[in-house]
Length: 371
Image (cartoon, rainbow, N blue to C red):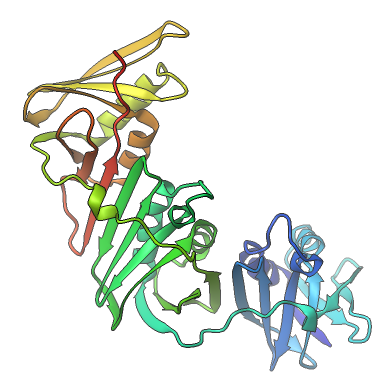
């Protein structure tokens, strides 16, 4: 079996698939790409048994067939070659591979493609279509709030709530929570599922700027298809916490403040905060907010004052500066609104400028004030 292709074209597709290869594969063959040629079309697949990526590219080939090729040496070879046509020749008896370029020949040992794990297929699935840019937004605005705690598997992924023509993305680590809802989707189902963080990170890296993504899902897997690429991931089999129960509804104190100024102030003040808690104190009254932090162990202390508009009783509350900075970085409006009730209850961050067709709500738990 022999095929020819541009080295840069092949490299581009390999780099997409390479994201699915794990750092410590449980089987040696999982360190390989699966190459399958059918009717002058090369399909490249990679998997870590949880997440799989398949991508397709046209080639000039003399026959159909399949082979598993070691990923690392193939990628390194192509990265080191200037763009040019290359020929890949596969010995179907011993799976030996020879790559021929304008510079010379490179031989490596492949494996029997039939031994490569089967990539899950979309059986008994429900479908949903949405714009690539919208899916990217949903992932970008929530992924940072997922948990790394393997003892709470549900919270290590993003919760997708599909409700006819509306989709809600939720992520939380019990300290912060993000809920992002987007209305322009086409689906005829109502369902929920949890997509792992790794799969969403990979998806975010390969989603195109424009066009539509076809999503399919059943009880065990989700399938994302676009531009000749298919990403398949095993869903997290766990019950997602009732996140609505933790969102406080009665928040009489409302602070409105310039997002960028507030974020920059927090970044400066956080330098002086205790490195374990990252605690900053907000002392809020009707026309300004005083932001302060101290680290008693090192006698470090900082204070700044920003003007704001505030409706409610004067309030002093502590937050983790790192969480606030991250959240303000994801919100896009010029000003933000923070709804508060007491120093021991969560604060709600909202953009002041609503975008048609989408809603975002962020929640952050307070860091208790020390006496």
